[in-house]
Length: 259
Image 1 (cartoon, rainbow, N blue to C red):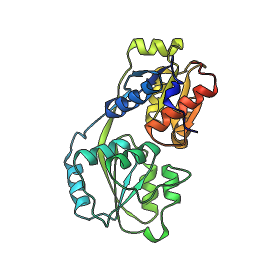
Image 2 (image 1 turned 30 degrees about the vertical axis):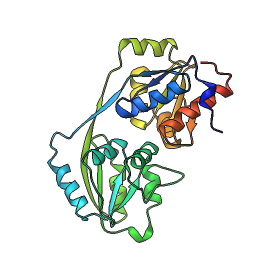
Image 3 (image 1 turned 120 degrees about the vertical axis):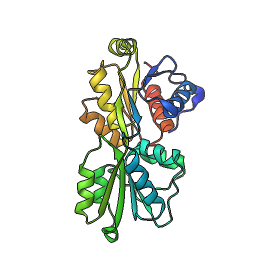
Image 4 (image 1 turned 180 degrees about the horizontal axis):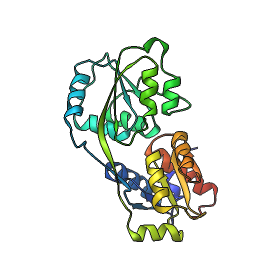
């Protein structure tokens, strides 16, 4: 059931958004519409590869129709594609891993041909790979911190895999004030949009007070958050930023609005 924003069920809540940029601004606006105070404190950032030439060459091949599949496992990779205005030929299909990635693809106007369900993870993608597509060329642009298991799994399926670094992940320390607010319980909830965000939250702010509500975008992110050592209280089924805030608002309403 969708919570009406008119109810303002998050009034009095201070919610940490550990992502910046357009994503953080969008989430903050949705939080405010439900009555919450958004504390935007980016804990990760992204930069281009130190040597962009391999990426440039791979994207040229992609647009020329060289690849049968494009595998996207990061919303930031979608940003890279979008910023560069990459146009995929009709012959190239897209496989997507991760709830946030799928949302980013949709917003950027790309249509995913393969989304593993219910396990939207690298393992789920490998298990759901079409039997009639276990040959051909595949491009996997990813961060410098990605798990190599996906690459080896794709190769084992018989695919000719090209991997290229699309971006680098850079951690950002939170301010002492934000850390103190989390430790004291003044932060009512933290929104987790990916496994890497979960790891940085735990490394910088853990262990969290028992009163702090942890809300994750989708079951895969929740799995990664638990693996990082966080206790998950809210999992949004609608795997969008707005759906995540609505799930938190529903949680607040069902718990009497207590922050």
